[in-house]
Amino acid sequence: MGVDRRDYMYEDRHQRALSGWWTVLSVSHKLVVVNVVVFLLWQLPGLKTFMYDQFTVGWTGVFVHGRVWTLFTSAISHYDLWHLLWNMLYLHWFGPDLEQVYGRRNFLALYVLGALVSSLTHAVWSHHYGAGVPALGASGAVMAVVVVAAMFFPHRTIYFMMFLPVPLWLLACFKLVGDLAGLAGGGGGVAHAAHLGGAALGLLFKVLDLRLFGSPGQLEPEGARWRLPRILRLPQRAAVAAPAPPTRSKVDEATAQQVDLLLEKISREGMASLTPDELAFLQQASQRYKR
Image (cartoon, rainbow, N blue to C red):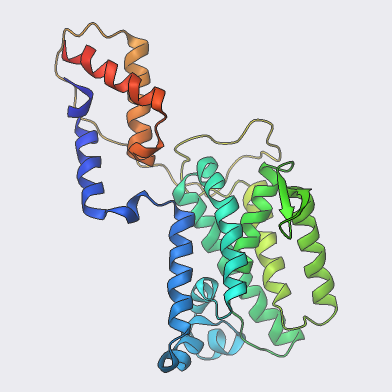
């Protein structure tokens, strides 16, 4: 049986034909698309009141009017173009790498948990110590992503303000210090408490290993630290494959194992994730299976 006739390869092709371009996007870039769509909705004059009620978060909205969903919807919501641009750049820069480490579902869990914790932190802090003004923006969830990325890749070079090279750990520290100073100084119209809440969630997510799902790929990059036993992990759904028919193929065990690894990679990340050498290997292996 050729490689292209395996059941899970056929199912993967069928699913991709149905879902189109959206399926091949990383979760990070899907979140970018969602944030851009919500930003465009803010630009429609007739939706201003609706957007304010449903896509900003504050104590009154959550605890008086019961709009608990705004703890998340506010984190995919931007009114200012520059606010949107910077948050989406950070998501684009660091999100895909964390997806490779954690898997798509765990990365989405990181973003959602960062959004919920940062929104709740802002609502409580602004109610007790501030003016109780509602907030919006992905900055808290993005801070969770930045903190985790800085712990995995501390020495990656980042160009601060697009021209000053700094290691990622220093950039994360700079942002945290800026938010602490801003919070102590009264805020200045920025939801510093939300940023710090998201950063705290990111720290706990990494240190306590709060993955909710089994990671399908690499668990940690080489040299990663802060590894502790994971908690709250849900069992990963196991793929059920039909038993292979008897065959007299002369394919050796090492080749068969490599083929299975590549097919799993295609099922998880798409055909575009294969390198030219991997594609050539699959084609050669397919011919050997057919013999």
